[in-house]
Image 1: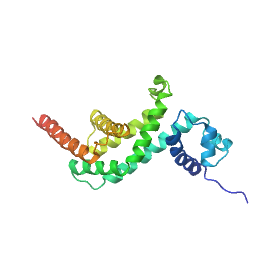
Image 2 (image 1 turned 90 degrees about the horizontal axis):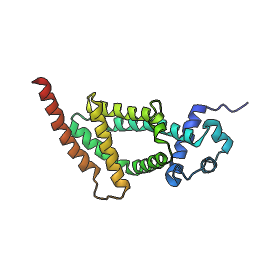
Image 3 (image 1 turned 45 degrees about the horizontal axis):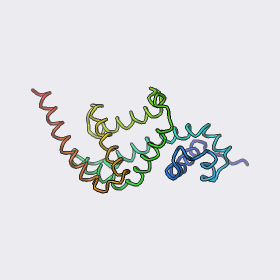
Image 4 (image 1 turned 90 degrees about the vertical axis):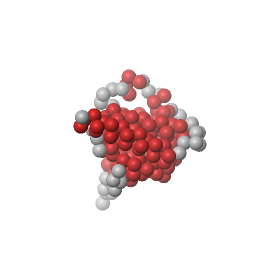
Length: 196
């Protein structure tokens, strides 16, 4: 009897294995052959699921953005105030610091090897992932202000980049607590303007 393969599950398993390979070698330096060897599969198998290294990376972005949003929202679940939520965000960043630094490194390396016009394409996986992160930030804040959500994402990305560049003085919990205080004042100010 032939073995029944859940192709979607297998594709996800391949994606989870390739993250560390991209983090170790960098997007620009690793080949599909090296990725296949690192995962212990044939190059043919890899090409069966991913027609190119770029397609593999794009599917990795899609998968990771979905996982990131689910994990972050689960971590923040149960917080009642913005201050509590920001403290939880800081702890979440500390707990996953190594992952976020690796992912940022891989992302920057990928961007260096791409045409910026293509990356700005409205239908790109990168736009979809960014919208997913924006929506999660709105849900996290309990607002629909996409500019504010983008600000939060830029803040978090900036903290991670500072860590990537070796700034040991960055304290995620402290920085998120400060941002929570600033956001509380900002949102209260916005509410006062709407009321008056």
